[in-house]
Amino acid sequence: MRKWPWKVYGIFLTILVFSGLEDIFYKNSSFYMYYTILVAFDKRYLLFLAFNIIANLLNVLAPLVVFCYAFDIRSSLKFWRICFFVRMIFDLVGHHYDVQFIKSAFVQSYAYGFASIGVVLVPLLPSYLAHYFYAFRRRMDQSPSPA
Image (cartoon, rainbow, N blue to C red; front, side):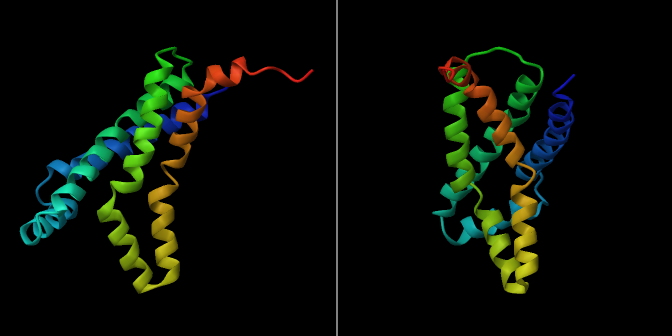
């Protein structure tokens, strides 16, 4: 029962991730309208849209890996190691809408801009910790102990 905070966080993250997926499919969401308008003016924004969709789909794996870590479920670590780096890359390049939102928040005020960064980053950071602990656990377990 020592990993119960991870289990609670896994439930929170599941709700968060699936509500983010709703933006992709709900035609009246600000996300959907943002990309519809941008793509109408410049087809290059289809690339940003694709990166954003891939990032959101990869984030669906985040609650899964948190639960695998919390319940000590053993699986293919090679898959989770690759997924860790791919997820990190697409989280860096796949959030054009969020970056624009944060930039506009900084125009309004620095406090609002930093709060926007916190709202975007803070909920996902523990998932990266759990993902790292889970994917690289055998390397840590197999490292030689100090003499």
